[in-house]
Amino acid sequence: MRILHVCAAAYITGGGVSEYVRNISERLARKHEVTVFASNPTGKLPRYEVNNGVTVVRYRCHAPGSAYYFSMELPMMLRKVKFDVVHAHNYHAFPFHVAGALANYDKFVVSPCFHGAGHTSFRNCIIRMLKPFGKRTLKKADQILAASEYEKVLLCQQFGFEPDDIVVIPRGVDFSEFKGLRRGRRNFKSVLFVGRLIDYKGVQFLIEALPKLPDYVILKIVGKGPLRSSLEARAKSLGVFDRVRFYQNLERRKLLQMYVNSDVFVLPSRYEAYSKVVAEALTAGTPCIVADSSALKEWIDNESCFGIDFPIDVERLAELIANVIGGDFNKELAQKWIGTKIIDWDDVVSRLEEVYSN
Figure 1 (cartoon, helix red, strand yellow):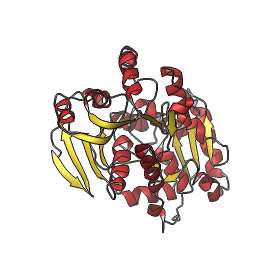
Figure 2 (cartoon, one colour):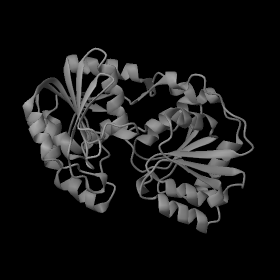
Figure 3 (cartoon, rainbow, N blue to C red):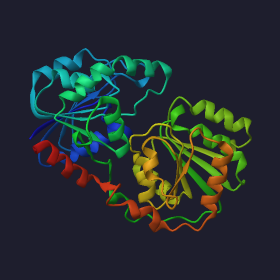
């Protein structure tokens, strides 16, 4: 098959849609001809390149606030060639809808990564205004894919689809990456956050909770984003700056080792359509705490993953962290999800191939 992935992501190593598209594309390319139309808002990335058998073509675009990804170039690119399957990603960005309207394909597949709301009041207004257009894009699709039951229900509620119209395929984890990782000995307890440093991810609540935890507890924050400077300033004002460690652009192996070494992983995020970082933490055998909101609800079992109500109560969050890191946690409890809600990337691709060919 000739397969095209269209996304607003840049197709680089990292999280989110970019990593999802990269993982499925490189595995699909073992048997199929795969092209990715990816973004290049700064113009600093290569226009053309081939990565592990995947042809990547980047389009210039305007992405205010790292959103929307408006492009005059992408429509012309889509009209030039035809593919057996066009797979569009991320409902909340311009390329998703342009692919549905202008691409030449035999089959159109979409992965909306739909949150149901914007992360600011302005973006909420835009989403509401564009909903009729968005519904037309989704109606064009031969198959809609959701990353979780939560996303599936949300799409049904907001756009009037029937449950059978949507197939749930979770994001993948490369289990082989975790082989050989062993937990190191330390004289402190560590709380880990991995994600973009933006308001809705809730990392600021961890800074607020840290002074309420014993001095031997440190907070490790992996990621980058606009909140970095304010998080540092707040940690200094609370007198806990020396107990906070910031990391970004970590090598993959170092990040996985950080999951393994941590005593608890915390994601107090308001919006998630699945959460690969929770899947990776649990694969590493690390207990998690998540906000009882969006798709994060589906992870809460009060054995391997514990929930905290949203909006976040910092006192309650600190208490829950203390209880989890102070308990005798059974690593196998976290790994019970493997094979059900946590699946290998090869399994993800097998399911995608069925969707593409049926």
